[in-house]
Amino acid sequence: MEAPDISMKNSGNNSGIPVYIPTALQRFVGQQETIRLPGSTVKEVLDQLVAQHSELKAHLYTEQGLLRSFVNVFVNDEDIRHAQGLNTRVAEKDAITIVPSIAGGAGGDLSNEEVKRYSRHLIMPEVGIQGQKKLKAASVLLIGTGGLGSPLGLYLASAGVGRIGLVDFDVVDFTNLQRQILYTTEDVGKPKLEAAKARLQAINPFITIQTHETRLTSDNAMEILKGYDIVVDGTDNFPTRYLVNDACVLLGKPNVYGSIFRFEGQASVFYAAKGPCYRCLYPEPPPPGLVPSCAEGGVLGILPGIIGTIQATETIKLILGNGEPLIGRLLLFNALKMRFRELKLHKNPGCALCGPNRTITQLIDYEEFCGLGRGQEHANGGEAAASKEITAEELKTLLESKKPVKIIDVREPHEYDICHISGAKLIPLSEFMQRIGELDSADELVLHCHHGMRSMKALEMLRSAGFRKVKSLQGGIDAWAQKVEPGMPRY
Ligand SMILES: [Zn+2]
Image (cartoon, rainbow, N blue to C red; front, side, top):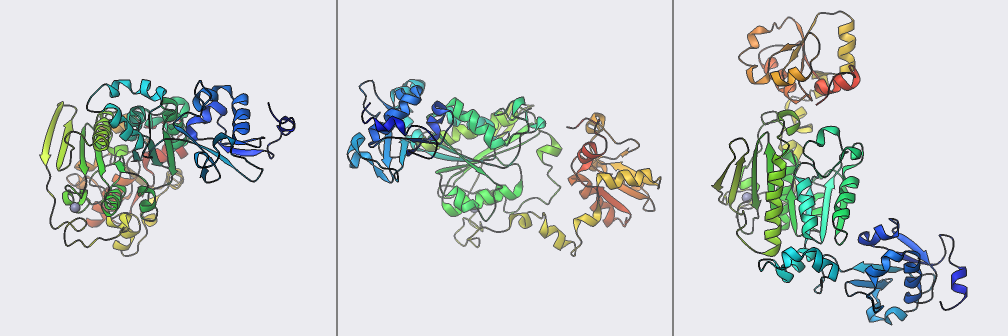
């Protein structure tokens, strides 16, 4: 091209001007985030870039060779439009950043590719070009990328929501694939966020996917949530649900709620500025163990598909500012009866979080609030959960020692049919109180369930009834299958 010495510098990774490639365009450059290239002006550097990665050219330049209107280029922190444009000079100490006009900016025009992609939206008056630009400028945070997060992510990405944040810290497991449609069999063992980001970005390279690989806690929630317009709750546990609700109310953000259990689901939009919050509905969580998790109670695989899609619909309506949102309404769905019901929700004037005399003004310890973890140990007079539990390996040793020990399985009969420990007696937790007379407090008892929650509940019942020689199998039969009986089917 121009100065002959330029091409001589075109080798090695540590020389040249660093060019930061946005996520949306990384697939055209072999997933590189930074590429160092020679050149003394922006144009020379970018010419080198498209010469090396020809696919990128059409995404950066129009046929006339002008920078596309949705691509902004910065040298350090300055937009080149406010300098000398493509002729802005650069030196070794400078950095070039390519910023596609995603998620914001008053402009946010749609490129021709985007117009084509979203055409079925654009021809609807309820969305139109203005609505599509709102979607592009919007940011949505999905808490959880599991059963609910899967359809949410897929539809919001397809719809062109400009910036989608994902919070999760889990790894894809075989038992996820029955409902978590973001993932494939090949993804098993990978971090969920890595697989989710790749899938969503493959669906729509015009949006930004931001990942937060962490457990959401009182320490990080405000910082993470504040960067988004709308928060969508796809969690499966009470501490996180209250945490998300409280943080949303404190930050003044809408919280698109969904929950699932077996074949029933719920959805609503909690937005304290316009209606009730989750605490108005449920000021306190149920005691631990009363409401089983999906892992224990099961969930019909398609149910999160339906509820998550309803949450995605509500999210898009909030962004568009169109239609009647589920604010102040609780939608109940029963898949077996194929019936939707709707309940009216009212703002509770006595709500400790969003009422006029609120007492909650900052995030609290949600594990303790929900009677889990530390709080529970304190409530039990400092007695650690460990002293009530036995590990799978310890149980194996105990059985091999031929000491008389009775194993009580507190799961449901259909779970017992999937797998059980040889010699275990089945007394489901649901019948436990009525059948307590079948047990002898003189016996050494080991209780187990699937993961160790229900057996702890049964253990407490026995202790209240005066039983002392009783332990709960830590991690349930699942831990047993992993550590002692590897041939046993897991579910
Ligand atoms: Zn409230």
